[in-house]
Amino acid sequence: MAWHQLTFAVTHDIADEFSDALLAHGALTVSIENFEVPGQPEFEVFGEPGHETDQLWPWCTLNVLLDLDHNAEALMAAVVDTLGLSEIPVYQVDIIHDQDWVRLTQSQFEPIKINNQVWIVPTWHTPPNIDAINIRIDPGQAFGTGGHPTTQLCLTTLLSELNSASDILDYGCGSGILAIAAAMMGAKSVTGIDIDEAAVNAARRNAELNNVSAHFFNSQDWKGNNLYDGVVANILAAPLKVLAPLLCSYVKPGGWLILSGLLAKQTEEMISIYNPWITLSQVGQQEEWVCLMGRKK
Image 1: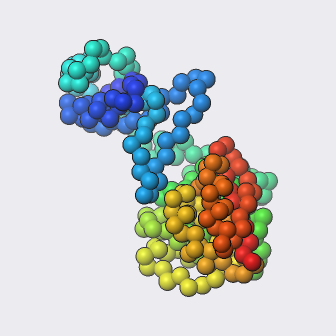
Image 2: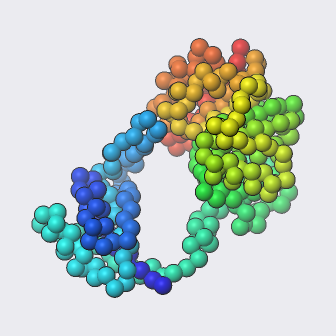
Image 3: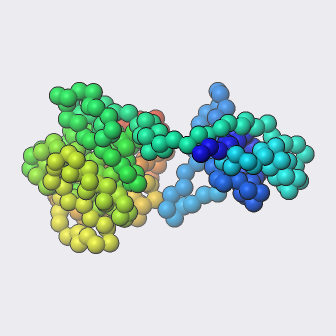
């Protein structure tokens, strides 16, 4: 089976209307992505829980999927007429053939080198360095392939703080990368928590893949009353603000807290919020993302 894919750019003020009109006139799917203009700085669009945004990039790329028998030219003409626009945007038409979408998606994720001793290796790849610690990951439907800067920042900081006596809590564990890395590096006990059942299941499968002992729970079912030598939370700024007293309450006196999922411009505010319990400082930055860490008095 095959489909037509239409690709074109529109300004942000008509992107949503154009998308709705395309679907109304028979498009199968429409996705809106950033249209990157060479030489222009990256425009950040973020939506966090409790802080959703309708903001879009100044220019947007629309990717439209159609049945092969659906006339692209007629579709675009009908949409432009519906919206009352003066002209049809310049668009490209490609044929998308049926294929193994799982393998296509997997091919986008390569092994990631954290340092000379540690790699994150998707299960469909052969480890580049068999002598290294290779964290085998199949994210499934969960967030976390190891490619995001915040995961790498957290992992680098986590590995520098681990010792064999550590009890570790990974709050918002996703696919389990951080928790599994802690277990593989010799932490005494590791617990991962997430609100997403798909993430919990993926993390459990990944722990089995790596032959490590780690315990993963849905946050609704978890009875969190333990104290930990180290707590790591790689989520987003909005929930990290709300969770500040809770996360700090899980850290033993003298223990450490690692936070990421933060932009550099959010650093000072986050440090101020956590200061009543733990004094945080920036310990790393990749691109616009930062990692914070502090010890409990």
